Length: 62
Image 1 (spheres, rainbow, N blue to C red):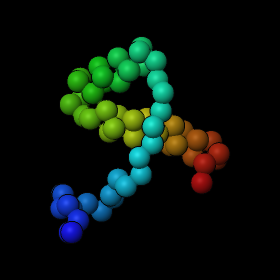
Image 2 (tube, helix red, strand yellow):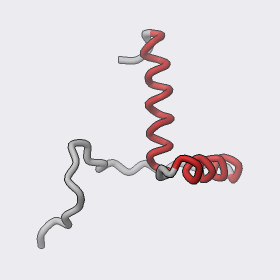
Image 3 (spheres, rainbow, N blue to C red):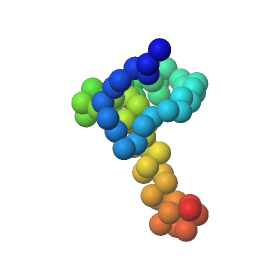
Image 4 (tube, helix red, strand yellow):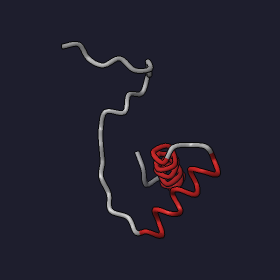
């Protein structure tokens, strides 16, 4: 059986993470997604990048 073909990418998203969040956080995520037109996954990745950049400026990240 051949692998399902999707859009080509240089950064495949192959890892799945699960997390538990409150109703309030879920609503914030949904609102951010709706207002920006980005997916909830994209919003989460943006948050990770923002924190990583902050830590990198402080010299705490690789």
